[in-house]
Amino acid sequence: MSTKSNNTKKNIIDASMQLFANKGYLAITMKDICDRCGLSRGGLYRHYSSTKEIFIAMLDRDIGDDRNAVKQAIDQRVPAKVIFEHYLAHEKNAIFSDNKGLFFATHEFAFVESEQRAYFDKRVELSVDLLSSLFRYGQETGEFKNFDITNVATHIIYFFDGLKTSSSVLTITEEMVNQQLNIIKEMLI
Image 1 (cartoon, rainbow, N blue to C red):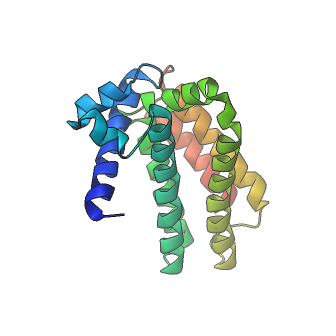
Image 2 (cartoon, one colour; image 1 turned 90 degrees about the horizontal axis):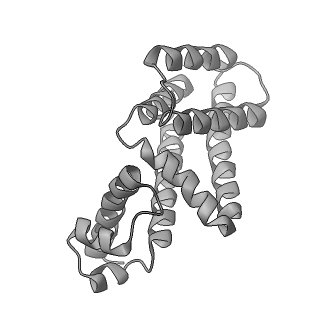
């Protein structure tokens, strides 16, 4: 695929992400995305056939970027504590970002597109694998305590999912989040 095509796909996903965050999954049409991207219908349909396909591409990019960043940091022998602090900061920033509506849109997508259950199960599995690889690395380097890696990774994934989803409807303060992150760090480091 050409660089121009990749750039166009990236721009479509970036623009769509903002639309989904602002209006949810169901409210967005391909026309909305065309308007936002400045593309003709043909230009958009050359890359994606539906909002569903765009939404899945957006989710895939997100998990792919996270997995690549952690793998690269481990390969470069960045200390596990540093990688984990970065991971926690990334998750914390997501809770307070202007894109909070994206978490609601993701759950909306999961309910509306119920045939995607296996896809979401796989996303959780990939996220648990990502954290598990970091925790194994941290235990190997002696930076992390000995704990059940898979269960703790699963707990953290569900914890952040619940917190990010709730952040769009509940008052969640930075102090509250910091307290929870400190509990997680005390369990692991």
